Length: 199
Image 1 (cartoon, one colour):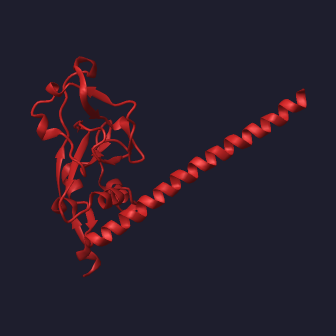
Image 2: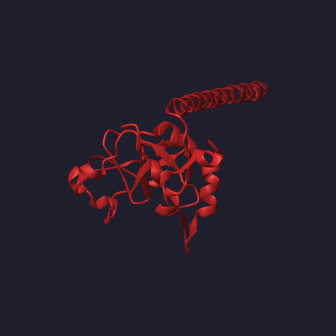
Image 3: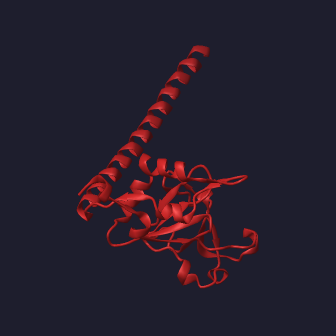
């Protein structure tokens, strides 16, 4: 198989839909248990659960069609940073707004692998080259997203890559936490030197 044959358009490997439309200000919706994802809630492939808006299920017409399913990926469709997030049923019930595309991988593509690939320079460069620019904000169209070249490798190889990527991410997180703790300890020690000198 050649390198060219290895890559397939995302649209052939996934179904892609736009998020749910909301027409009113958020304070006009009844509060409830349905989490509504906004672009501001996503950073570094994670959701900030502290800022999530939650509305009543009756506020979302045909809710069953819009609830996110485990393994679906949402990707911001406007702005300079096309952040994405792999939904793993947390929060338990959630919908995405029209600021996102919702990607449902087929059986040929592991969600964890696709989510990793969307954060790689290859995918980012593709989006940068194909971003549409409006008068006030840039974005990516659904046809462009559907044409994103994705490496179609065996499921076993996809799983291996996803596992290694997850382990590397966990190591990076732990290292960052350790460095923060080390810096806090160092600052505390240095301030002790100042306080002891003035006594």
